[in-house]
Length: 594
Image 1 (spheres, rainbow, N blue to C red):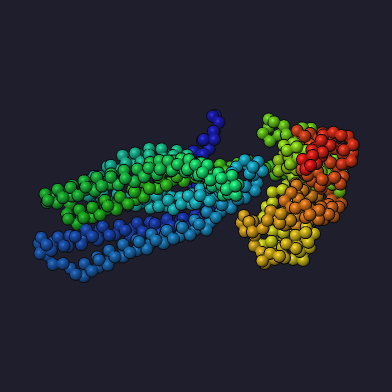
Image 2 (tube, rainbow, N blue to C red):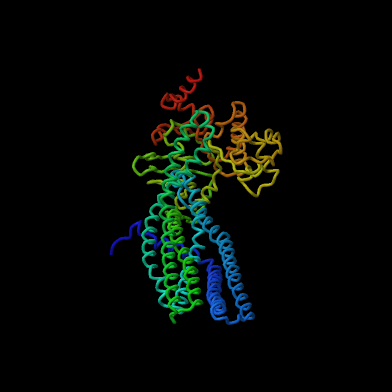
């Protein structure tokens, strides 16, 4: 038995099958739309028959002088109005039903699934995938997929049911003229299928470029200040123009191939329409018993109505190809391998003893970043991690938090292997203050309370005071209720750092990770924060990543990391006495200041 490839998994038929499976939760709405659709089609079939009867009455009056039955005429006109009006009303109701249900349930549900999926994907996915790419899949691609629900109803139900009904009615009136209408349909459908397959490939390429464009725009606006500072506007515009040109070419080809389908169907239908008119005219002029004026009028109207569902199917085929390209990108995201779920139920009961036991790790599986790392941190110790850029300092923290999994060895907290713990429970043991501050669009109060949502206002204010943030907060226009905008541009970088430190104070976790936590504050504020930090760190196991060695001279243990290995460890005075690698780093910082 041959093994299924990735391309088989995301073939058009399989993807369409998943789309149909995903809309099962709203089957009741689709069933209601299908009933409305069938009712609308049956109502619309009344019109040609009644128009044929009215035409016969007028023809008989004009050719033979037979008086028109006015009561019958009024009844026929009334039925005609009911047919057109009722069909239009049912069609409008169907559109409203499918649109509202699709937006409320299908679109929302799919975006929730993607959001939930991202939370269960490895951190490596977030690190390696541009934000704009994820945004493109969640917003643009899902919106396109939601349109498919309507297309499926309009194409599969309305289109094919209408074709069957109209074909039956035409053959019941006159088989010869009906054949003239339907004989060209197989040819046009086959040609449309070929174009549809070609357009699918173009739409796949277009969606990929669309993701690149989203990623570039998100990156460009995020780094707007840097672009302006280095006068790189022209360069960025050139890159944007290049991506946009590729975007335009892929989209143009996709729309061109999809757009050819409808004209082909329309041309075929018009040819059939002309054939019916000519054939009906010949049969009428020759006074053939096969057809009368009313029959010819009815066939002509049915032939014209026959074009509607055909064009709907043609448009649907083009739209579905576009949707399949979007669906493939969304399903590939939803099918990505998630982090393994581990929860032995064992919870560290101690005060925070941490052991790295022969830990090895690499990001790409080839180049080692951490090599046979052995660290023993006693509960309550203040551990500083220093070393050159790229030496593995942040990686140690990433492994401790299980943002990444070790290749070999193990890490334990109070004797419990963290690889067996639930990640949320593990991370709940730590408070974090990072060099790259992150604040969301909300009030200052909300951003501090993010560390503990159930905290009281007094507790939030107390945490801000400990972080030396209270004074600048009360000086803001609305104090703690001041709204921080999306890019946090209405407060300074140092103020953002203080808010994140206050957040960590409030969380009050038994272990702390500080990644250059005072990098964005001035020297005077740093002194106050260091004093407050010493109070906060008292009795808590803490890991401090530092570049400015003056901030960690009072650490209980200093780990000097270089090239993924701990090359030295000890207190500041012990390491200085050795006159080794740490001493060179420490002295070099002061030499730079002289």
